[in-house]
Amino acid sequence: MSQPSLRKPDPKNKQLPASGARGGAAIKKRASKPVVEALAPREPVPCLTCGLCCTYLAFEINGPTTVKRASEILWHLYHERVSVYRDSDDEWFVQMETRCQHLQPDNKCGIYEHRPHVCREYSEKTCEINSADEGMTFYNAAEFLEYLSTSRRRVHKQLLDGYAVQSPEALSTFRKKKNGDFKKRLTVLRG
Ligand code: SF4
Ligand code: SF4
Image 1 (cartoon, rainbow, N blue to C red):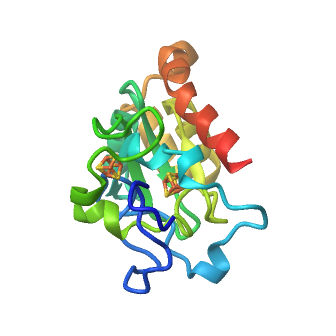
Image 2: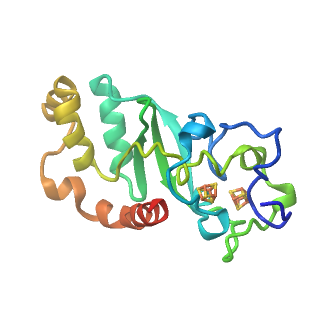
């Protein structure tokens, strides 16, 4: 990671925070544990064989503590190529798959010397691929409702009483298929 042509920050740079803004182009990273705790018990995935964090945006959102907040999460999940992530600290993020135009086919950053601040802060040691915090990702409304049915029963009931469609087909059809690419890449990369 010391070659200037690589797209990610040099982890040997002591000025880099152990945690910071997330991914190639997002607002907040989701894995925020200390590096020692966060390293997964396997060989870290090198950035040049990965590229995942330059292919989506993530923004922190409210967790489903009320029916209004839960229905907002449902709304996110009704959209194509949008998923929602909950980390082990119960922080929630909406994730939108969209590839950065500067990510080259060889997984290098085409504007490395001029990449945005958020890209420089990100650490491959605590990223979503190399962190031990696997959290929970919801790729469609059906998965989210299933989670609520056991974790937040009151909110779940309120949603079903007026804010959520209940047909399995309407909840998970093409969204599941479209979001499958991201799920597959994440699964493969995390080993
Ligand atoms: S500017 Fe470079 S490092 Fe930042 S998201 Fe795009 S390709 Fe990735
Ligand atoms: S997700 Fe992690 S390993 Fe993959 S490109 Fe980003 S920083 Fe590197």
